[in-house]
Amino acid sequence: MYYVYILKWKRYYCWCTNDIKRRLQEHKRGKTKTTKISKTYDLIWYYILETQEKALELERKIKNSGHIERWTENKEFIVI
Image (cartoon, rainbow, N blue to C red; front, top):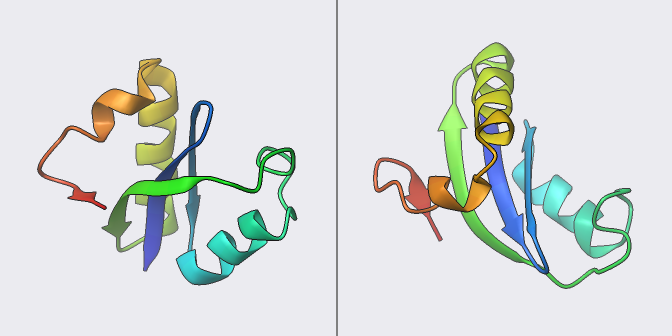
């Protein structure tokens, strides 16, 4: 399984992973370039997909939309 997820702190951050627990720990420890500056964030949304290809496709679609926060309003997806 693959997860596409959105974090929020000063802005929205969207990424995908096959191990969401590990990835969130990496964010907390400052191991990721994007969230290294601020280790405080909220996981506000995620969606589970069967393949990496589908996850990457959804991630690109979200990022290219230019409005990541709008995806968190879609009730079809899992909102935290």
